Structure formats: structure tokens, C-alpha cells
Image (cartoon, rainbow, N blue to C red; front, side):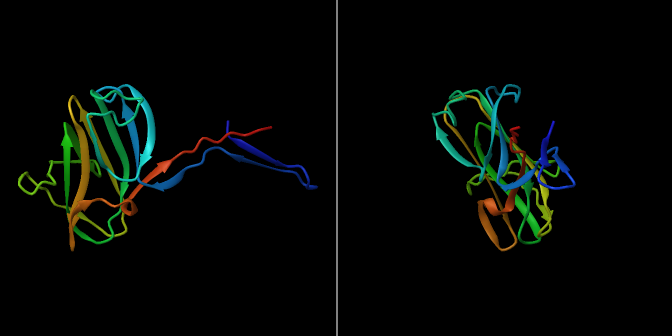
Length: 173
């Protein structure tokens, strides 16, 4: 397994083996499941933001219009240090973990008051982020954002989201 490169033009042959290649990309890894229980994985991709309004349509032809789930995972890196509140709206259900800690839902809608837990974050430090979304029936939408030091409630920008991707490498002999 792995990629092997041989140098056949040199007097002292050299062989290099690349066992794996991992790259960091802006955005979050998204796993798309064809059920509500995160069991039937259909495909994965990288999403730059969590800000979707699919209405009555499926987010992708490989999923149905209803009864699907999505899991975003990666890391979050704030530009400023301080306390952050995370806000999301979801039709039907969503859960958010920051560094393994499940947070209570806090809505984007100003008229909706929910328990908000402030999370202290340091500028330039990366924190694990996982968000799970479940669509049961009807309209489908989800949006994840934050507010923090000198920053109004808004969608988390792509420049603050990171994930590791493992590109498929094929070698020809």
C-alpha cells in the first residue's frame, strides 16, 4: 500500500514511499446519511459554511427529500480571544459540540430566547467542532453561527473553519 517512486536515472537508486497524504482545507467535512440515525452513509464532501435552506428539496440527489441526517466535523479557529455564543436554527433537529462539550441550542432568531452558554476561546487556537443535523419531514434548513468579542451574530466564516481531507492517491506503474 502507498505510493512508491523510484529514481532510475541516478547511480545510487532511491525509493520513496508515501503511505498517506493528509491536507487541511477551509470548511468542514460533511458526512451525508440516508437515514435519521447516522447509520447509512452515502457520501462525504467539504462544506465551506453551515448555511443551507433546501426547502422541500433534497440537499443532494443521493439523499431523499426527508429522513436524512448530516454530520459536519472539523476545527474552529477564532480570530479574537474571548467568550463566544453559538447560534443555530434547524428544521428539524441539530446538536453542536465544541471540544467534545455538547452546547444548548441558541437560535439566530432574536425573538426566540434559549439558554446560551458562553464558551471561552483563544485567538489562533483550533477547537474540535461537530454539528449533527436531522431532517424528518417537510422543509429542511440549518444555519450555524456565532457572536463574540466585537462581533455581531453571524454565520461562522469559512476562514475560521478547517478540516482534514485525505485525497485518493493512485499510482501507475
